Image 1 (cartoon, rainbow, N blue to C red):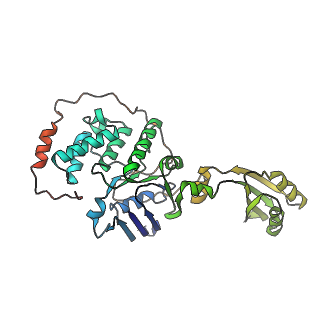
Image 2: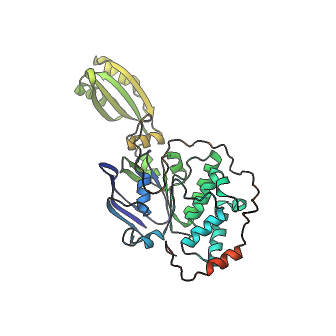
Image 3: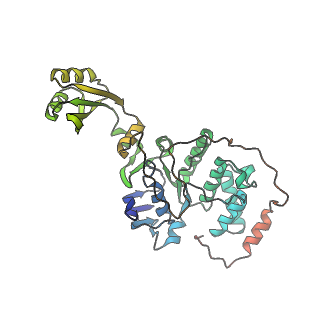
Length: 374
């Protein structure tokens, strides 16, 4: 459904996206995973046509995003990281505005609004001002506009950032439901977010794809391995001879450090604890061990190893783009508001107009040409 070939995006001398290529098949939930500043949002903006690429091709349902933008965009529903909402509108008014911009009219428009309001759980909040809604419900309004025209492909950029734990669970369940009838691409920097809902994972780091596979296959590559990190004084050839003769050793890497020291990283079978053997082998060879660290593989460590990130590293920030876009954060903070805020009285000067009147008004303009396809 989506084919991306050799995508490049440069800002002066800085390359935010460097030769990204991947394919999205129908009927799956894809996780687009990467650390902060890896190029996720830039890639999402290019795929949806809100940002031009420096080089490369993007095809959606056979339509080139540049040569046939209306054909390509009509198949996509997009929720940016910062939902494009009008705070002084109600969700119902906003969805009517978006629906008309996309070519919906009359009864068809209101059937679509009723469908997405029910699916996203907006219900009793449909006639409240958006600025009075909690973060979680504003996010639901953003998802509602993305699925309003029932597109084949739904792209969600960091849909749970800033939500409290209960809201995160509800949005994840909504994404699973959407995946039954749509192809979904979910962008996130949170591994648990991807593993909870996605069928397939694409990992990006420093603007390049570093892994692309099912989550099961991805973890199997690292499953069953534990690691020992050593700082030793000695010669590389002697270190390798001492380690390679120990049963259970699967991989070894040796890197020189200042003052004649070596950093040694040993991958072992998870069923074998070789720390005592390592200690005595190095003692017999008169190579002092100055430090030893032992770690077991977790999903988080798989992600860190694939992306080359360290837990305390400071990632580069993506340059600003034309589309509204919040800076990616590394945490999911809890909001003070609850997912079900107390309803507020609607001011008298903002009465909710009857649907029949709106539908009649929408149907008067029969010569309207849809901006984003119908």
